Image (spheres, chains in turn cyan, blue):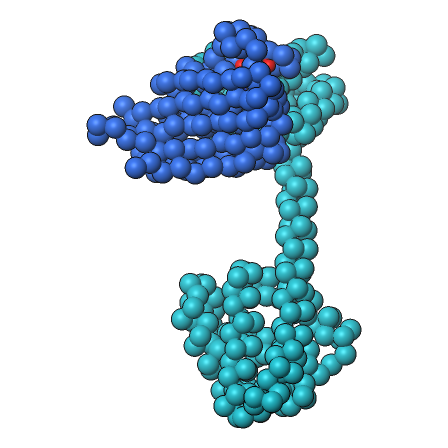
Amino acid sequence: MNKIIATLVQDNLDEILVNWKELMKEDSEERFFQIMSQSVIDNTSREFAELMVSNLLEGENKYENRLNIFTSKVVRFGWSISFVMKAINHFANIVYELLETEKIIVDENIKEYNTILTNWITPMRDGIVDTYAKTWERTVQLQKIALQELSASLIPVFDKISVMPLVGTIDTERAKLIMENLLEGVVKHRAEVVIIDITGVPVVDTMVAHHIIQAADAVRLVGAKCMLVGIRPEIAQTIVTLGINLKDFTTTSTLQRGVEQALAWTNRQIVEVEGN
Amino acid sequence: MSYRSSVEILTEWDIVAARQLGRNEAKEVGFGTVDQARITTAISELARNIYLYAGKGKIEIERISEGGKYGITIIASDEGPGIPDVRKVMEDGFSTSGGLGAGMPGVKRLMDTFKIDTVVGEGTVIKATKWIR
Ligand SMILES: Nc1ncnc2c1ncn2[C@@H]1O[C@H](COP(=O)(O)OP(=O)(O)OP(=O)(O)O)[C@@H](O)[C@H]1O
Ligand SMILES: [Mg+2]
């Protein structure tokens, strides 16, 4: 019976695909059909159909392998999981209807065929959900690492002057890292002035402020001065309203002004030289 | 009619989700950049308090309107330990966690109205509203 279904699908593949694409277009707002070229749509659809058929014919292992390859491809296309689920459902429905019109499914064997179809579709759905879940987990993992890599390194910009640009959300874990890198960097670069740039920090709440204050205190303890730059106007207002005291801080609006100030503290300045 | 959306607070990253929601809502309701920052920061404070002191809870954002005025209410609720001395926690600098103790009084100043209902052993509900001026 599996073979009968597979042969039927293979023999009528073109027609099935046309119907399937029609259904998918009607049913989804997926951008896939709008942004992909016709040839990509055709190829992917065919690949999708072949995968559906291969499950009916081939042994377990080979199928799993192909399912993995297929789903990872689909994931990279940016298909949503609901789109893929719809694709499977529509495909199965079209095949079912075809089996009916071809009078392959009749009253006597309808139960058997239903079982076959269920056994055909269910593992496919499970497999897809599984692959998606794994892909998501991996993505989250990678993003965590990416975020950690974003975390704050102290950059020596001039002799005795280092800058730490902070970008993104600061959670407890990152705050710890910032502190470590800051102190390590001050010692390593023999920094006398450290400029912390918070231009890229979206929200400065009490917790972030607290961490920055602690970091600055620690920097002072190892004998360097600390400056806070990149405070956007709306952030400045919120900090004041929160009642956070930054009076012990030298603050300037831009990194550029901060660097000028830092040079002044270390008895230097930038001068323009006359061109020739 | 009011429109409400919410974020469950379970992990530190839910705090980020809550304030993202708040920022988007504030923007859509029509708040300016400074008020957006105020609302986002207030949410951040309340969400972090839930995370730190109650373990879990919920931040809800409600769009409100009254007599042609528009605004946003933040509702922070948890079933944590509750707050024994509300007057104390509203003082600047009071903290049981070694923090700055600026969160609660700060939120009160960041928003227009601030209401706190808390029962020791049962939990805390904080409602804070900001209107577009
Ligand atoms: N939802 C809550 N449930 C129980 N206790 C709370 C809750 N929110 C705040 N508290 C108590 O109120 C105190 C003051 O809170 P507040 O946010 O003002 O300062 P903080 O969290 O200690 O420090 P920070 O300045 O970083 O916010 C907290 O230390 C805590 O003991
Ligand atoms: Mg707090």
